[in-house]
Length: 82
Image (cartoon, rainbow, N blue to C red; front, side):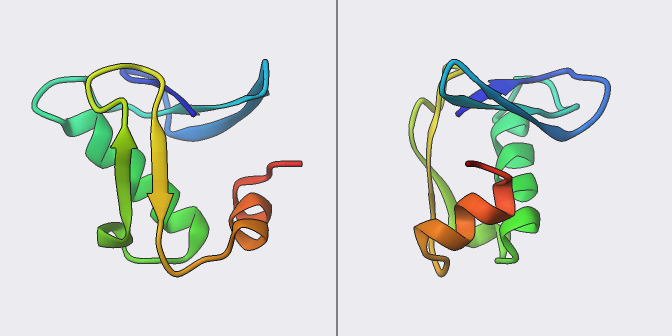
């Protein structure tokens, strides 16, 4: 997943080059963009924000995210992935 901070709105912008593009309005300061990402993914997946964690890429744009409590097929459907 690729994160774009300081966007005009929060959205899942689709898949580009095989990577989900996520836009958040929060700036990449003091982990605010990462928290916004986790909150957005949790909302779409229907789980609590505490169940979403960033496994890899905490300081970069490309991230690996773990969502607990949802299987992979349900998560793909919730995020609009093919």
